[in-house]
Amino acid sequence: MLMTSPLAAQLNLPAGQVRLPPVGDTIGDVTDTIGDTLDDTDSIVERKAQQLLRARERSLSRLLRRNRDLIERDARGELARRGEIIAQDLTEAELALLQQARFRLIARETIEGLDFSITRLGTPQGLDLAEAQQAAAEIAPNANISADNLHFQAGTMEPVKTMVPTMVAMQSATPINIEVGIIDGAPGAATRTLGEKGFASGAPKPSDHGSAIASLLWDAGIRRIRVADVYGSDPAGGNALAIAKALGWLTARGSKVVTISLVGPRNRLVERAVQSARLKGIVVVAAVGNDGPAAPPPYPASYPGVVAITGVDRRERALIEAGRALNLDYAAPGADVYGLNVKGKRKRLRGTSFATPLAAARIAAAMERGGNWRAQLDAEARDLGTKGPDKIYGRGLVCAECGRKK
Image (cartoon, rainbow, N blue to C red; front, side):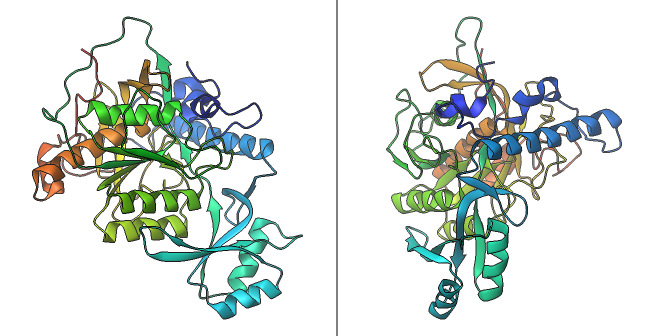
């Protein structure tokens, strides 16, 4: 495997600053595939789902142990940036009360492109994040208080051991000029973009994961790609505030589709950002993640209106590591697809991360043709599994040969 400590490789982090690795790398053969249905009573499938869930928690715990100066658990036990809460709809009177309770005002900011404001507050000395959240909610019960939760990339990358494959022609015969934004790590120089901006320490910084996402879009015909790097070299990158700002920046710069191959817990700030972007006509496409069907619902894929994407292998079987969004929209190739790493070398990819930009490209192609993009995608999608929309494949498989080799 290219990555035994995947995020270190993806982000080139120094030793001791390793982020959450994709679950598939931590448990080896658990990342197998299943057939058309997932029988929750089947002991083998259930055992693998539980292995994925345990691997997820082990990975989170390792990340926390290595970065306790930057990361802690919130009131729900999820990882977040240490010592900071974010408030929406906070009045001046409530802010004054919070300051009296020793909350420290860090900043009041308006999210560019999304037309709403936030207040960043440092937690009182002596209170952990969970205690501070509870105290703030009691002092300002009408405000939306949230932690700055972390979100993680998902997917693995392997070297191509034989001749570099020739790619199958993508489904779009002509270049697609609808702008597609990426929220991820930055790509390497091999993929051309309209521009990149960093929303984390050390960003924009080229990464393998961001390079793969951008190259898959380019191979699918997208010629207007803009990238918001929410990781850089920050062990607490991928946080809610970075994602909200990134989405706002992409919206303000003209992206019509935004692809997000990241997974985290439900967060009020990200949910507000997604809702605001959608009201401006932005189509947000997100991966269901690789933590398996027993993991909590993945976000942002599970927010209302987000187009949730899962992955299938070459035999069009669902990836067993695929998460379960509250509402699944489509499947796309998520194994044995090929994209570029940060050095411009073509690698074999696996994970719902890599299915997501392929689906985003098909949405952009439909938008460029005009009319109802969803009706066009529904007409293109090939029904898999049980007849009609289902929780394994959504409304069907799109971009079936995208990212494949001859």
